[in-house]
Image (tube, rainbow, N blue to C red):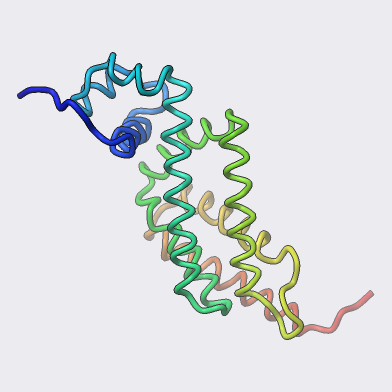
Length: 194
């Protein structure tokens, strides 16, 4: 079968990300990507210059997808505590099973090594925290920082799930976040002591 002459960058970058998830970031080479896409390695080098640029562009595209999913969920879910739970559970669905989650952690390492990707992650964190703040607002309005606190609990719940993945990740996340929201509601109703 002849090699394809063209393929959109979005498709090539999706293939690069798939290789990183399946076999680790170190396995992404122009030869491996050429085998996965049918494009020649020299064509890929001309497009992406070097492996560092290829990895960065693939991960930036993945961040774009996460931004879109976060925005889509945020625009459709109610601005209630249960809407906050649904938002984070919806973001958890792509983690899949334990093997997929563990593979994702290998890829996350690449995000942490690159300042541009770290900055992209920080922007997403801020947008997510704001969306959660809106859903956890009290009678007086949003409580600054509460959304980031819930997002931090969510990330911890994902990690704790990974040590004992007996139930689907979204079920574990929902249970954990509902307990979190319950504690927030109970704490808000309790009188403050000094």
